[in-house]
Length: 252
Length: 245
Image (cartoon, rainbow over all chains, first blue to last red; front, side, top):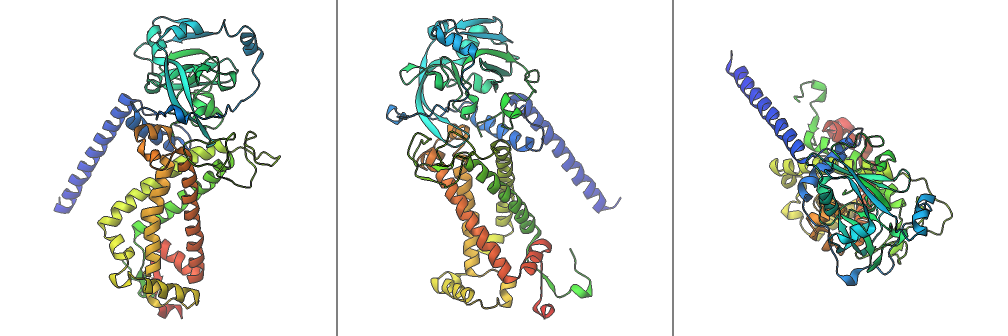
């Protein structure tokens, strides 16, 4: 065997070892930190996965910017969608006194919370920005209880990886990973700017995810469920958004 | 690649493989970003300054086009087709390609002294008179001399350095500043720009400057000889003047 081919053999061997070690380290990182989004397939999958993985490593515990009270928008934009369904109107007719939030899936104590139950949990406020994928934005004060409080009260199991949340309106649901679900600024929001949360802004109950675009903050929440896989929900892409062509992860 | 054929001895290398490959990847990703960026703007063709802005607040300026969303006051009774979903997916995927390509180009450009040798103007050329001489020659439509098919003049060098080290970093920065998650990790990225809406408006203008560069760049290539310049950027070689006669 000549020197050249031996050198080539050693170099190739080292490169292959480094490659395999690199892949093993990458797959370990991916498993440990959950760096693959549900909509990772298709031609846009690589870009989406890079964005989600990079931001999960960078922003796991970071807090969305909070603003002084003076920066609260005088005219917030409700972005009112379709008129409410009859089911919603029945709750509205009795002042939402019978509104309930069901909590199920991978939790030790499935159950449901009335709005009064939620208000009895520690209630916080935050002045954060709503940023729409279209480009507009506004700042408001949001009052509610961190989703983590409800998950802790229900005893979310360690194998849960996503929280799926549903609106009372049909085909309106989404999901977030545990990093966002347990994030201190992810609120089950009951109030806005010192008052009740107006219907046009998602009242009586909206899940606010301030580190992602507005479309992740689903209005009129009636059910949350903890799961280790979003495959069973809808088309298995994690939310209704990818089914309509939009990214599941909206931290961009 | 060794050149051994006697017919091609008069062909000299112009652009390195690294420059050619990264150039064309950048072309493709920039065009994807441009088309999808325009598509995203259509969903809200109003621009603002400061932290916030929406359909209920006065705009800094409004593009005179219909919107793809019915909630935006544009003055038109027409709502354009909404293409935001795939546009956003492709915008961010192309941005990754552009950023990773730019990193490879930047690191390799420093290591191979590409920037110092090919783009940094020679000390004698770092003065206004050198600039004016090149511009005067260009506007006279004087034919490019032989050196200009093998090297860049001071105006080209300056513009390329501005695009590589000012405009592209700025467009990436202002784009990242639009990410609510990135801003939570690095709040200064958006705060020093004057807020989220300022970042969006700056992103739009920096993209506009890049489009101006693209238009002038392509126009100059056409004026200098489209096929010879294209061949130089694809095969890496230029013809010697003897062969051109």
